Length: 316
Ligand code: SF4
Ligand SMILES: [Zn+2]
Ligand SMILES: [Zn+2]
Image (cartoon, rainbow, N blue to C red; front, side, top):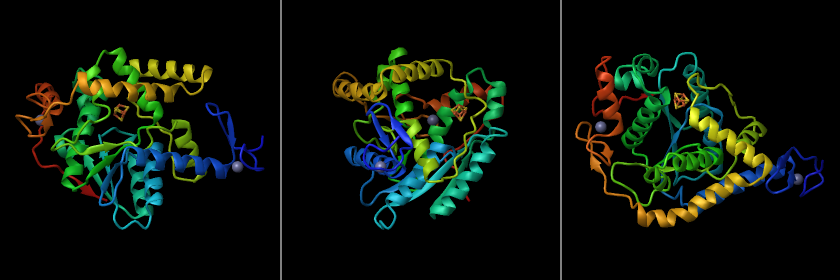
Protein backbone atom coordinates (compact mmCIF):
# COMPACT_ATOMS: atom_id res chain seq x y z
CA UNK A 1 0.00 0.00 0.00
CA UNK A 2 1.29 3.49 -0.89
CA UNK A 3 1.50 6.43 1.52
CA UNK A 4 -1.49 8.79 1.31
CA UNK A 5 0.92 11.76 0.92
CA UNK A 6 3.72 10.46 -1.33
CA UNK A 7 4.73 7.54 -3.50
CA UNK A 8 6.63 5.64 -0.77
CA UNK A 9 5.43 2.37 0.77
CA UNK A 10 3.17 2.91 3.79
CA UNK A 11 4.29 1.40 7.12
CA UNK A 12 1.35 2.54 9.25
CA UNK A 13 -2.40 2.63 8.76
CA UNK A 14 -4.15 5.24 10.89
CA UNK A 15 -7.65 3.82 11.17
CA UNK A 16 -9.29 6.93 12.66
CA UNK A 17 -8.10 9.17 9.79
CA UNK A 18 -8.18 6.52 7.05
CA UNK A 19 -4.61 7.54 6.09
CA UNK A 20 -1.70 5.28 5.14
CA UNK A 21 1.66 6.73 6.18
CA UNK A 22 5.22 6.02 5.07
CA UNK A 23 8.07 6.20 7.59
CA UNK A 24 8.80 9.85 6.84
CA UNK A 25 5.21 11.00 7.00
CA UNK A 26 4.50 8.98 10.15
CA UNK A 27 7.47 10.56 11.95
CA UNK A 28 6.47 14.00 10.80
CA UNK A 29 2.81 13.43 11.85
CA UNK A 30 3.88 12.22 15.30
CA UNK A 31 6.30 15.04 16.02
CA UNK A 32 3.85 17.67 14.82
CA UNK A 33 1.12 16.22 17.01
CA UNK A 34 3.29 16.18 20.13
CA UNK A 35 4.53 19.72 19.47
CA UNK A 36 0.93 20.92 19.02
CA UNK A 37 -0.16 19.39 22.36
CA UNK A 38 2.83 20.94 24.15
CA UNK A 39 1.91 24.32 22.67
CA UNK A 40 -1.84 24.00 23.31
CA UNK A 41 -1.38 23.38 27.05
CA UNK A 42 1.79 25.55 27.38
CA UNK A 43 3.55 22.47 28.72
CA UNK A 44 7.12 23.55 28.03
CA UNK A 45 8.18 27.19 27.91
CA UNK A 46 11.33 29.21 27.94
CA UNK A 47 13.06 29.00 31.34
CA UNK A 48 11.62 25.60 32.22
CA UNK A 49 13.63 22.90 33.92
CA UNK A 50 11.62 19.78 33.13
CA UNK A 51 11.99 16.60 35.16
CA UNK A 52 11.01 13.57 33.10
CA UNK A 53 9.57 10.60 34.99
CA UNK A 54 11.63 7.92 33.29
CA UNK A 55 10.76 4.36 34.31
CA UNK A 56 12.85 2.91 31.49
CA UNK A 57 9.76 1.37 29.86
CA UNK A 58 8.94 1.96 26.18
CA UNK A 59 6.77 5.08 26.60
CA UNK A 60 9.05 7.01 28.95
CA UNK A 61 12.14 6.13 26.91
CA UNK A 62 10.44 7.48 23.78
CA UNK A 63 9.41 10.62 25.67
CA UNK A 64 12.93 11.27 26.98
CA UNK A 65 14.55 10.76 23.60
CA UNK A 66 11.95 12.77 21.71
CA UNK A 67 11.93 15.78 24.09
CA UNK A 68 15.73 15.88 24.06
CA UNK A 69 15.72 15.88 20.26
CA UNK A 70 12.87 18.36 19.83
CA UNK A 71 14.53 20.89 22.15
CA UNK A 72 18.11 20.16 21.19
CA UNK A 73 20.06 23.42 21.12
CA UNK A 74 17.55 25.32 23.28
CA UNK A 75 19.70 26.74 26.04
CA UNK A 76 16.67 28.22 27.78
CA UNK A 77 15.09 24.80 28.45
CA UNK A 78 16.64 22.06 30.57
CA UNK A 79 15.73 18.42 31.05
CA UNK A 80 16.64 15.90 33.70
CA UNK A 81 15.23 12.46 34.47
CA UNK A 82 14.02 10.77 37.63
CA UNK A 83 13.53 7.02 37.93
CA UNK A 84 11.66 5.59 40.87
CA UNK A 85 12.97 2.18 41.87
CA UNK A 86 10.08 0.60 43.74
CA UNK A 87 12.00 -2.58 44.50
CA UNK A 88 10.30 -5.10 42.22
CA UNK A 89 12.62 -8.05 41.89
CA UNK A 90 13.47 -9.22 38.38
CA UNK A 91 11.76 -6.25 36.73
CA UNK A 92 12.99 -2.83 37.73
CA UNK A 93 16.71 -3.70 37.42
CA UNK A 94 16.30 -4.12 33.68
CA UNK A 95 14.39 -0.88 33.02
CA UNK A 96 16.75 1.00 35.33
CA UNK A 97 19.67 -0.06 33.18
CA UNK A 98 17.89 1.21 30.04
CA UNK A 99 17.02 4.49 31.79
CA UNK A 100 20.67 5.01 32.65
CA UNK A 101 21.80 4.34 29.07
CA UNK A 102 19.14 6.62 27.58
CA UNK A 103 19.99 9.59 29.80
CA UNK A 104 23.67 9.09 29.04
CA UNK A 105 22.96 9.02 25.31
CA UNK A 106 21.03 12.30 25.39
CA UNK A 107 23.33 13.92 27.95
CA UNK A 108 20.91 14.76 30.75
CA UNK A 109 21.20 14.27 34.51
CA UNK A 110 19.62 11.11 35.89
CA UNK A 111 18.51 10.54 39.47
CA UNK A 112 17.08 7.44 41.13
CA UNK A 113 14.66 7.56 44.07
CA UNK A 114 14.44 4.14 45.73
CA UNK A 115 11.59 3.00 47.93
CA UNK A 116 14.14 1.17 50.05
CA UNK A 117 16.24 4.31 50.66
CA UNK A 118 13.22 6.48 51.36
CA UNK A 119 10.83 4.17 53.23
CA UNK A 120 13.30 1.54 54.44
CA UNK A 121 11.37 -1.22 52.59
CA UNK A 122 10.88 -2.30 48.99
CA UNK A 123 7.50 -2.61 47.27
CA UNK A 124 7.86 -6.42 47.28
CA UNK A 125 7.92 -6.31 51.08
CA UNK A 126 4.91 -3.96 51.31
CA UNK A 127 2.95 -6.32 49.05
CA UNK A 128 3.92 -9.34 51.15
CA UNK A 129 2.55 -7.87 54.38
CA UNK A 130 -0.07 -5.38 53.20
CA UNK A 131 -3.72 -5.89 52.38
CA UNK A 132 -4.00 -3.56 49.40
CA UNK A 133 -3.26 -4.25 45.74
CA UNK A 134 0.41 -3.69 44.78
CA UNK A 135 -0.49 -0.78 42.48
CA UNK A 136 -2.22 1.04 45.35
CA UNK A 137 1.06 1.21 47.30
CA UNK A 138 3.17 1.72 44.21
CA UNK A 139 1.02 4.51 42.72
CA UNK A 140 0.84 6.56 45.92
CA UNK A 141 4.50 6.24 46.95
CA UNK A 142 5.81 6.76 43.43
CA UNK A 143 3.77 9.93 42.95
CA UNK A 144 4.96 11.13 46.36
CA UNK A 145 8.63 10.51 45.58
CA UNK A 146 8.42 12.00 42.08
CA UNK A 147 6.95 15.24 43.40
CA UNK A 148 9.44 15.47 46.25
CA UNK A 149 12.37 14.65 43.96
CA UNK A 150 11.27 17.19 41.34
CA UNK A 151 11.10 19.87 44.04
CA UNK A 152 14.47 18.90 45.48
CA UNK A 153 16.00 19.17 42.00
CA UNK A 154 14.38 22.58 41.40
CA UNK A 155 12.31 21.37 38.46
CA UNK A 156 9.52 23.62 37.21
CA UNK A 157 7.50 20.80 35.55
CA UNK A 158 7.22 17.04 35.81
CA UNK A 159 6.68 15.27 32.48
CA UNK A 160 5.09 11.83 32.36
CA UNK A 161 4.62 9.54 29.37
CA UNK A 162 0.87 8.95 29.78
CA UNK A 163 -0.63 8.46 26.34
CA UNK A 164 -4.16 8.68 24.94
CA UNK A 165 -4.89 5.06 25.90
CA UNK A 166 -3.96 5.79 29.53
CA UNK A 167 -5.91 9.03 29.58
CA UNK A 168 -9.12 7.60 28.10
CA UNK A 169 -8.95 4.67 30.56
CA UNK A 170 -8.46 7.00 33.52
CA UNK A 171 -11.37 9.21 32.46
CA UNK A 172 -13.76 6.26 32.13
CA UNK A 173 -12.48 4.65 35.33
CA UNK A 174 -13.27 7.81 37.28
CA UNK A 175 -16.78 7.86 35.81
CA UNK A 176 -17.28 4.20 36.68
CA UNK A 177 -16.07 4.79 40.24
CA UNK A 178 -18.14 8.00 40.50
CA UNK A 179 -14.94 9.77 41.51
CA UNK A 180 -15.78 13.15 40.02
CA UNK A 181 -13.32 15.03 42.25
CA UNK A 182 -10.48 12.96 40.88
CA UNK A 183 -11.81 13.46 37.36
CA UNK A 184 -11.79 17.22 37.92
CA UNK A 185 -8.15 17.04 39.06
CA UNK A 186 -7.03 15.46 35.77
CA UNK A 187 -6.61 18.89 34.23
CA UNK A 188 -5.12 21.10 36.94
CA UNK A 189 -6.99 24.39 37.22
CA UNK A 190 -4.15 26.27 38.85
CA UNK A 191 -0.70 25.70 40.27
CA UNK A 192 -0.60 24.74 43.92
CA UNK A 193 2.30 25.49 46.23
CA UNK A 194 4.38 22.39 46.87
CA UNK A 195 2.99 20.49 43.87
CA UNK A 196 5.07 20.45 40.72
CA UNK A 197 2.87 20.88 37.65
CA UNK A 198 2.55 17.62 35.70
CA UNK A 199 2.64 17.65 31.94
CA UNK A 200 1.74 14.82 29.56
CA UNK A 201 3.08 15.51 26.05
CA UNK A 202 1.73 12.14 24.76
CA UNK A 203 -1.82 12.63 26.03
CA UNK A 204 -3.28 12.91 22.50
CA UNK A 205 -1.30 10.15 20.78
CA UNK A 206 -2.18 6.47 20.81
CA UNK A 207 0.05 3.99 22.63
CA UNK A 208 0.51 2.19 19.32
CA UNK A 209 1.75 5.41 17.75
CA UNK A 210 4.24 6.01 20.59
CA UNK A 211 5.64 2.50 20.17
CA UNK A 212 5.73 2.77 16.37
CA UNK A 213 7.61 6.06 16.61
CA UNK A 214 10.09 4.61 19.15
CA UNK A 215 10.73 1.56 16.99
CA UNK A 216 11.15 3.60 13.80
CA UNK A 217 13.68 5.80 15.57
CA UNK A 218 15.46 2.68 16.88
CA UNK A 219 15.19 3.72 20.51
CA UNK A 220 16.08 0.97 23.02
CA UNK A 221 12.53 -0.15 23.83
CA UNK A 222 11.78 -3.00 26.16
CA UNK A 223 8.37 -4.55 26.45
CA UNK A 224 8.57 -6.29 29.83
CA UNK A 225 5.47 -6.01 31.99
CA UNK A 226 5.54 -5.41 35.70
CA UNK A 227 4.74 -8.70 37.47
CA UNK A 228 2.08 -6.89 39.51
CA UNK A 229 0.22 -5.43 36.52
CA UNK A 230 -3.18 -6.94 37.04
CA UNK A 231 -5.50 -4.00 37.67
CA UNK A 232 -8.88 -5.78 37.51
CA UNK A 233 -11.16 -2.82 36.64
CA UNK A 234 -8.59 -1.04 34.49
CA UNK A 235 -7.97 -4.18 32.43
CA UNK A 236 -11.71 -4.48 31.80
CA UNK A 237 -11.98 -0.80 30.82
CA UNK A 238 -8.88 -1.09 28.61
CA UNK A 239 -10.36 -4.08 26.73
CA UNK A 240 -13.70 -2.32 26.39
CA UNK A 241 -12.10 0.82 24.90
CA UNK A 242 -9.94 -1.32 22.65
CA UNK A 243 -13.01 -3.07 21.24
CA UNK A 244 -14.84 0.25 20.88
CA UNK A 245 -11.90 1.76 19.00
CA UNK A 246 -11.63 -1.31 16.77
CA UNK A 247 -15.26 -1.06 15.71
CA UNK A 248 -15.55 2.74 15.73
CA UNK A 249 -12.09 4.29 15.14
CA UNK A 250 -11.48 7.61 16.88
CA UNK A 251 -13.39 6.83 20.10
CA UNK A 252 -10.35 7.24 22.34
CA UNK A 253 -9.86 10.82 21.25
CA UNK A 254 -13.60 11.52 21.55
CA UNK A 255 -13.52 10.34 25.19
CA UNK A 256 -10.75 12.89 25.79
CA UNK A 257 -12.61 15.65 23.91
CA UNK A 258 -15.83 15.01 25.88
CA UNK A 259 -13.83 15.28 29.07
CA UNK A 260 -12.24 18.55 27.94
CA UNK A 261 -15.70 20.02 27.32
CA UNK A 262 -16.91 18.73 30.67
CA UNK A 263 -13.89 20.09 32.50
CA UNK A 264 -15.22 23.64 32.03
CA UNK A 265 -18.30 22.68 34.09
CA UNK A 266 -16.19 20.74 36.57
CA UNK A 267 -14.23 23.92 37.32
CA UNK A 268 -17.47 25.33 38.71
CA UNK A 269 -18.95 22.23 40.37
CA UNK A 270 -15.66 20.83 41.70
CA UNK A 271 -13.26 23.77 42.08
CA UNK A 272 -9.76 22.95 43.25
CA UNK A 273 -9.44 23.78 46.89
CA UNK A 274 -6.43 25.34 48.54
CA UNK A 275 -4.27 22.45 49.74
CA UNK A 276 -3.20 21.95 53.36
CA UNK A 277 0.12 20.65 54.55
CA UNK A 278 0.21 17.07 55.78
CA UNK A 279 0.39 17.00 59.58
CA UNK A 280 3.18 14.43 59.49
CA UNK A 281 5.39 15.08 56.47
CA UNK A 282 4.39 18.58 55.40
CA UNK A 283 3.63 17.62 51.80
CA UNK A 284 0.53 19.14 50.13
CA UNK A 285 -2.75 17.32 50.66
CA UNK A 286 -6.47 18.06 50.60
CA UNK A 287 -6.90 16.33 53.98
CA UNK A 288 -5.06 16.30 57.30
CA UNK A 289 -2.70 13.51 56.26
CA UNK A 290 -1.40 12.81 52.78
CA UNK A 291 -2.06 9.45 51.11
CA UNK A 292 1.53 8.32 51.63
CA UNK A 293 1.43 8.98 55.38
CA UNK A 294 -1.90 7.15 55.64
CA UNK A 295 -0.44 4.09 53.92
CA UNK A 296 2.70 4.20 56.04
CA UNK A 297 0.43 4.31 59.11
CA UNK A 298 -1.35 1.13 57.96
CA UNK A 299 1.89 -0.68 57.16
CA UNK A 300 3.60 0.34 60.41
CA UNK A 301 1.61 -2.27 62.35
CA UNK A 302 3.10 -4.99 60.19
CA UNK A 303 6.62 -3.93 59.22
CA UNK A 304 9.23 -1.47 60.23
CA UNK A 305 8.78 1.35 57.79
CA UNK A 306 10.05 4.85 58.21
CA UNK A 307 10.90 7.95 56.27
CA UNK A 308 11.69 11.54 56.93
CA UNK A 309 11.20 14.88 55.29
CA UNK A 310 14.40 14.63 53.34
CA UNK A 311 14.39 12.75 50.05
CA UNK A 312 17.21 10.36 49.26
CA UNK A 313 18.30 10.39 45.64
CA UNK A 314 21.24 8.80 43.91
CA UNK A 315 22.75 10.23 40.80
CA UNK A 316 23.76 7.72 38.12
S1 SF4 B 1 1.91 -2.20 37.44
FE1 SF4 B 1 1.40 -1.45 39.49
S2 SF4 B 1 3.02 -2.25 40.80
FE2 SF4 B 1 3.76 -2.40 38.70
S3 SF4 B 1 4.92 -0.50 38.35
FE3 SF4 B 1 2.81 -0.15 37.63
S4 SF4 B 1 1.73 0.76 39.39
FE4 SF4 B 1 3.65 -0.21 40.15
ZN1 LIG C 1 4.78 9.49 2.62
ZN1 LIG D 1 2.37 13.08 54.63
